[in-house]
Image (cartoon, rainbow, N blue to C red; front, side):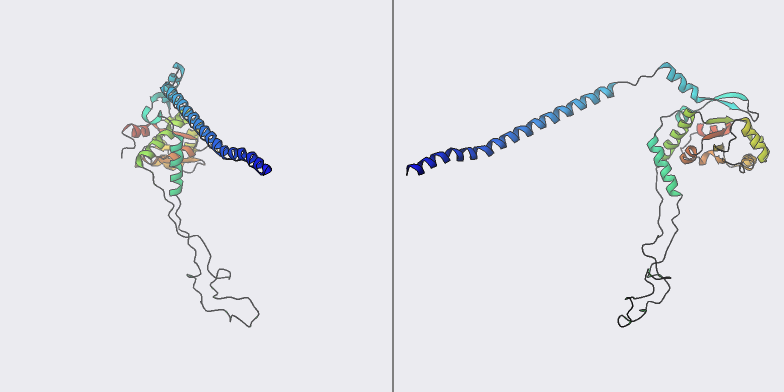
Amino acid sequence: MRSLQSQKTLKSPLKHRRRSMPQSKSTNRKSKIANRKNLNASKKLSASAVARKVSNKKPVTTKTQKKSETRNLKLSVYNMAGKSVETLTLPKEIFGAEINTNLMTQAVRVYLANQRRGTVKTKSRGEVNISTRKIYRQKGTGRARHGAASAPIFVGGGIAFGPRQRDYSLKLSKKMKRLALISSLSEKVKEGQIRLVSGLSKVEPKTKNMAQVLQKLDLRSKKTSLLLVIPARSKDFVNVVKAARNIEGVKVMPANLLNTYEVLRNKNLLFMKESIDFFKKGFGEN
């Protein structure tokens, strides 16, 4: 009897310990979770405070930066002999705006997607002009089991999962197109890849004459592409188009059809002096 009582007395504190252990673990977990929440809250507050400080700081612009910006917008106008005739200040709203690379990328993607026609078409096994009867009986021949000859595994049969007619066109708002073109033109001005020329409408409709003009302007190179921007498609600039259309790497485009893809695709841009007036008269409003 004494031995049984002693065993009970020994086991009783162990039971109490086992019951109390999970309670202490739960309290420790709760305290740890609460501490983590407090730490996360303090981190968020510190991050927001840093963001406020950064947003309140004004960007530092030096005098040299301001001068360089104004210099970039003042371009010299060259004649057909390659000599500087005058200086022209480009409109800041179009050639001196902020460069948005994401918008330019989106505009190029939309332009290239709209060039795809998607007119490809293949016939499936239900559209092929062939008999649908069973080739031979199911059993007794010793050959593989086959049905109609229009199955994709046979020559002359249909094509499984072939290409179908699809519309690849994407849409971009007029405002986004305009801003993308403005940022691309601003980038070209920043890189110094825009030239202005006057009196180009007097050129004769001969490839030799246009090649000489481009050579005098240091724009004649087979490795670099050139985009010649004319004011509009009219009889006054037919000679310019005829003289430049057979030169390798040179493309002629009117100012009203200018787009972001063509601006970024060509390394150098040659604007006729008359085409700048198009941008000054409310570019992109129509």
